[in-house]
Amino acid sequence: MVWSLAKLTFFIAIVALFSYAAMFLINLGGTVRFVIANHEISISSVTFALGIFLLFPVFWLLFKLLGLVQALAKFLVGDETALSRYFDKNRERRGFEALGEGLMALASGDPNLALKQASKADRLLRRPELTGILIAEAAEKSGNQARAMKAYKGLLENDRTRFVGLTGILKRKLAEGETEVALKLAQKAFALNSRHEEVQNTLLRLQSGNEDWSGARETLAEKLRFRTLPRDVFARRDAVLCLAEAREMISNEDLGSGERAALAANKAAPGLVPAAVLAAEMKRNSGEKRAAAKIVQRAWNIQPHPDLAAAFAAIDPDESPEERRKRFTRLVSKNRSDPESQMIMAELAVAAEDFPAARREIGTLVEEHPTVRSLTIMAAIERGEGGTAETVRDLLTKALSAPRGPQWICDACRLEYPEWTPVCRNCEGFDTVDWKSVQESPQRHPSSVGMLPLGVHPKSSLVPANASGGIAKDAEFESGDSKTEIVPAIALDFTSGDKAA
Image (cartoon, rainbow, N blue to C red):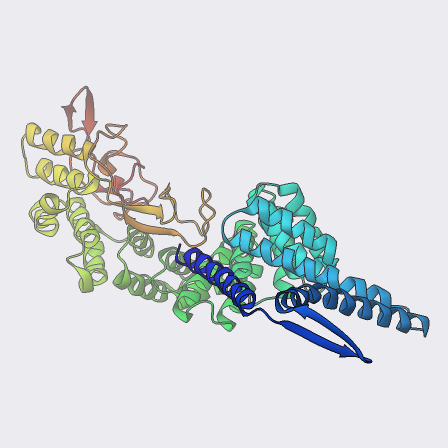
């Protein structure tokens, strides 16, 4: 608005200035005399001024004609490109003007005008390395994907623009879901410019989604080298890739390499629960129980987790309930107030039929952080101490609609997993699955018994198979329309947290 007003004011001032000059010359009167070879020519001052004004276009045409004559003369003496350069100069000027207008149109959000001007510039300049990028960008934003793809392919023919062409085609293939082609394009783009962060991230995501763990580790190392990734994040993600490699090696029966990779993953990220579990399992299978216990202890001190408890229990499967309680007391000593530690110690006390100790261990967890698991444990304690069927039934009824507690959840898309995985199968996010609480509204769970850890068959147990007693196995009471059976803690499933087994 201000700029338009300024231009209008300048135009009016120029018109007023010329009008004043004309009026001045008219009022001045007089004549202008020219004497040429004893011949005198007299003209009025107004006519003289108009003649000077009209001579400017004539001089401009003479200047252009002189340039053409000069180019023709050079051509006649042997300069074969003189005439083409003369005419190209004007075409290039118009081409660069169209290129500039196209850039302005694209920046202002008019891709159709930008594509029109870019095509004009391409026709005038005949320099696709300059105009191809603008054509591709404008065509893509205007929805003309075929034209954009043609422009990107054209950019592949020039060394200076090949990387831009590759990344453009890569984006299109990703959008179309052609991941195998996209992976090959990303590898080529990475070879041309390995420091480009977007290409690094794309290649890493495609490699991990394709389970190319060794290739993904190389890409991750390049991100660290070019400082596009903090060192602590690199250590964590490299451990994740190393763990995935270890699992693949073990599944291919390469146990030696798998054990080395699992230990390397655990060393790089001691708090990565799946790595600690696998490393402890490998050490246990090798007969190194003390080393296995140290691995689980270190991980537990960072993040208590039911999978770690199961791994710790598996180190000595033949111990008595009291021996196991004593050994687990050392495990949870540094974070005894953690809910996971409280529930595990309470479950072990229930298994040993020490119900007062179980009540002390679980403390106020049921009131402060009620979950399916904590409420079910409390129901077992009440039943073991001789509580009424109504009290136990009330606790189990609450458990049916209580939060499930921490789960393996993708940070990006919030998809839940029964087990940890390095890549989310929904959003293809790498290292996005983490152990955290589910934000859920209270509602009745789909299964009345299946959601209760105390009422399911175990995949693993913290209590040895030869443990005696516990709550009476035939104890039953009604809950709603179904009967719920409370079985001893030897049936507790510690590999799946609070979710249904």
